Amino acid sequence: MKTKFSYSQVLLSGAIGYLAYALLSFTKEIPEFIDAVDRTTPHISTIINEIELVRIEVGKVRVLVDKQIPAILMQVDKALPIAEQGLAQSEQYAKQLPQLWQHLDKIETQIQLLQEHLPSVLQRVDAVIETTNATTVEVSKWRPHSTQYLTEIKHSRQDIPRYLTRTEAIIIDAKTIGKEASSGLVSGFVKGVISLPFDVVSGLTDIVDVKSLSAKYLTAKDITIMQEQVLFLLTDENKQQIFWNNNDSGNRGKISKKSRFMKNGLTCHKLIFVNHFKDQLETLNELMCQDKQGLWQVM
Image 1: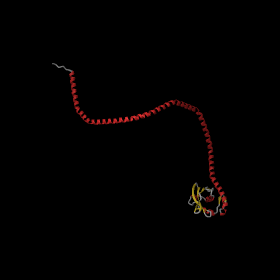
Image 2: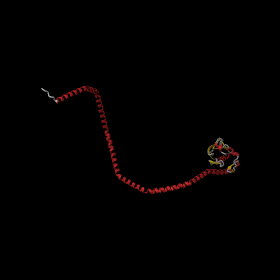
Image 3: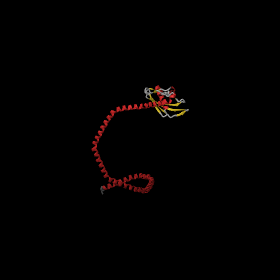
Image 4: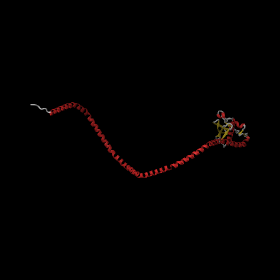
């Protein structure tokens, strides 16, 4: 009896063989799977604990949110009127926009008019500039003369105190001649310089400190004039300062008198000398006291 070849049997046997091979391969992997399960099993309790902690935290968050929701709702309720007010103001602004556009149109019209009149304005500005330039030219022509006038005025201002000093000296000298003729204070004018007796001048010989620059640069005539002016200043109780000037040397100065005071039973004044010489300036302080004979001495 002959057996017939069947494709279905061949395929079935092949499938059974593959299934057996697959089962064999799966069987080989089972130990590794079991080992992985064994390694994972100890961590399951930890994961469960962590999940429980997460659930607790979520519960706390829910409680906190539940507590804060009323406050949030209250804030929302408070914010709603403000939002409504903002919306109302926005509506008012929207209503005012047409008027704003009208104002802008008017401004634009005024700008156009200004642009139309701008050429005439510029012409006027040009005319003003031309007038200013002409004035500047005239001023520049007068500037040298002004400088000369200012120089002359400056010289006049410098000379006025000298003339006043001479005038005051003449007046004081005229009074002094009548008051002190008996004491030997005889005054005579010789080229504007007063000649004084030796006993009057002897107390004033140290009126300039020998160690000062004034002693080095002031002339004998300068010191003589200073001595005379000191006497004029000390004689006049109402006078607080006096000027001196020597046209020959070009030196000049100012003498100031401080308040009267008593020292060792003598009437004294502190004098401050401000001397100008050789483009330099020096200030000296001297103490003058009147002795029992009525003569002033440098102390």
